[in-house]
Length: 390
Image (cartoon, rainbow, N blue to C red; front, side, top):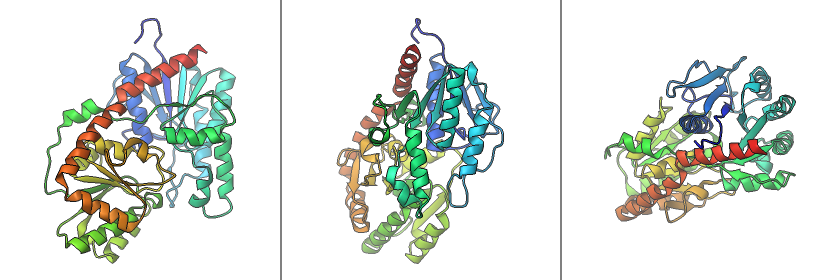
């Protein structure tokens, strides 16, 4: 750390904490906290957690928030009441002790409480935006109430003394709705390349060649992947398990039923949630192709993890997805329209082309170096210092 700059006391506020929860945002907070801590800053995490200390980090404080409850309802969505309870819980924090307060845009309502409280106690808040939905709310919520969420998000976009985004894609959407003309800086999600390299996963030819990892929800369009795989299996008379699906969610049973209906239940392995991210990485590293058919991605952690592990990615183009910002079509992976036959053809064209698989794999490993967490944490550190000096 620059000797002319002081140690910062930084708190990360989100409703769950890694590794008790393995989602993308909590992994991001963990990695940023880890590298900022190594730079000499004092790091605190808070959320609805039972952890009293961090099992992977020394000298990091965890403050469990009160009134914890289940994050998602039966439809896999956060509710207004849950978000309100989280917002009120934040007000119990000793925020006056911190130099910088880092929070994420999700679940929105807490931003209003936090902004007002920080202004009263004269503290600096940086908001990280992972996605900006805009009119996508009308697709996600198929009744008149979508406009309420749209309006809350729009109002949330006006908040924050300093705003950062995890992708250029999300930043551009946010700029169109944010009335302020201030700069939105990009602080990407990343990957710990040194740590991944040290794990040295060995290839296992008995593993399924295709893999998907992520939450099982409608927007991820895993049903599209299953239908494409069914066509591929039928056309190529493929024997054995071809696809592994890692993760859980509200549509898992629907997907298993669909696999059965398509006659490929014995060709697809539904692994469910794994206990650690290292186990997920090991499985991704064994596959030949990672497939991300998702309609909506504010960044794309799974595709980034895949290319860092040398596994090329097939993904679907979407105006609601930032994956193309990470995995470039024809360089680290292949982009297709969200159509069953296109996805099926891409699988066939790549799966049996070893030279192309190697080319994309090599390119992916090089590309991943641009997303190293150490570099990303350094950028966030500079943003924090510059912000405090204003």
